[in-house]
Amino acid sequence: MSFFKPRVLRLSVFALVASAAALIAVNVSLAWVYVSALTRPGCFVPTYLEGIAPPEEHWLTTEDGHSLRAWYYPSENGAAVLALGGVGGSLGDALPPVRPLIEAGYGVLQIDSRACARPPARVTLGADEIYDAVAGLDFLLSRSDVEPDRIGALGFSMGGVTIIRTAAQRPEIKAVIAEGGYDQLGAHIIQPSVPHSLPRKIFLYTVAGVFWLQTNINPWAVSPLDDLPAISPRPVFLIYGEYELGRGNGQAQFDAAGEPKSLWVVPDGDHGANYRIAPEEYERRMIEFFDRTLQK
Image (cartoon, rainbow, N blue to C red; front, side):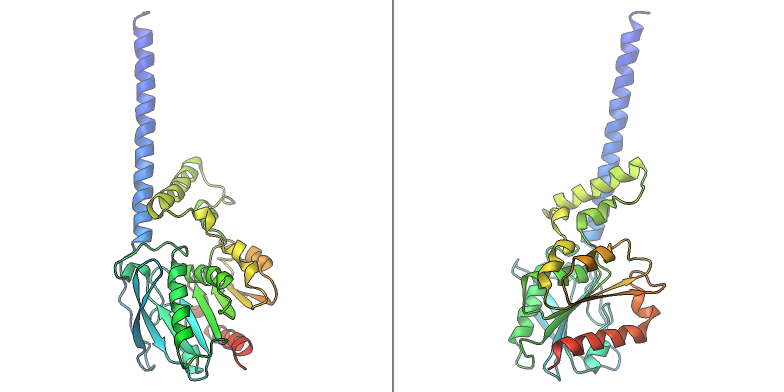
């Protein structure tokens, strides 16, 4: 009996270690696949806006060495808006909605996803995308049809995050509309306020770690919440759907922003659905904001 007890104990310990190692391997593998799909989403084929004259196509060179396709609708009123979207980019009829701006005479620059760059780059959820925004801003500043003190920015989701972070660094952006962005990337991934099960918590922390490993970007360092105060005294307009306000910590972002600022919570709205739910009010608020902040 004395011989079997140590052997059984050793086998039990080995089994526990092997099981733990297998669980860790599965967890890391799933996180790796998830992050890879998120940062390498593929290249979507954009479509032109129906009823709008086709835009000029340009390829912008970013500071980190990529070429990005951009569509530009020339300005008729001397003002222009830089538009950035989610992981699929902002070209054509992708969000954010730019048709009302074009019809109102604003110049509009839409920028494609980093997944479609030459060479292709990882989508980093608002981190490296700041290079794209800066390249777009520099393009608008070079245009003879755009007055340099009349440039605004409009962003949806990841694009909203990018617009806030860029405006904090570049005072040439005179007005900001950001819809549906997160407050801090690390917190957005791990969701500390949500009562997850232990396996789910472990997985989310693994996702954050794998994101850091794959992109070399600390997700806790990507924080629009910390960037918002630097935009003041330039105006900021935040848009959130009723059902995404908590996920994006929209109220905290509004509180962090300096004056002048405004927040519109779309009733029954959610991520990506706000314009569809309230198109007329969305267009009215957007045009009024840029008319007030960019027009002479």
